[in-house]
Image (cartoon, rainbow, N blue to C red; front, top):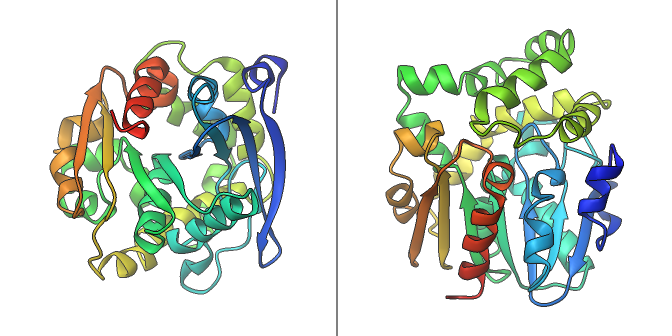
Length: 299
């Protein structure tokens, strides 16, 4: 954690680094008591994006906020052939192993942004492990690619930039890493002051750590290749799903989020739009926590 203020938000949480196989480690913060809930962050962030939500959920649940493979303090392997090391299937396996090693065979799951895509694949590959799924500010990957428009391409240009062959985006971003990170966060956040300078400095330290930029590019390269191949199998979600989005973000404006997830599910899908941009856990933490609490409690 980069600074004292952020650390205090996780005061009652412990920090653990868990071996999950193939020599890889996943970093997580664990706190609270009750049924287990796994929280997964998005790009270009870490588990710290949940700093305002996790303590609220920890009043009812045992909360595990983890860094995805390639992000934060978790391992950052090279992409591997066909970007296989950043397939959402591989990233999901990390999190299942993490939860099992923490003693949780079954758990509830929420993912924001890239974490939502990992959560989606985790729920498809391990339906026996996930009792309820929440996805925040995403539509399914294939649906978003299929509906590409000028507005989408302008707002989500990074989907096309980061997938360019190694090492074009790595070199260009690496030449101005802080500018790239700050510009990206500012463009997607629609609530002034929601991402404090202390949080930005934490994200920046993680972003500038060895292998982080390459890992993020591989995450997106995998999404445009091997992940689409896996998704083409057509499995459907088997558990209740909550789909939240920001009404002022591109996903909330351009996609019918609920219908896009109902198209991928055999179970009940509910959800709503919150008055914010892309970063729901930081821009609308109380509303996000309240929605997750109600959903995970089945109310």
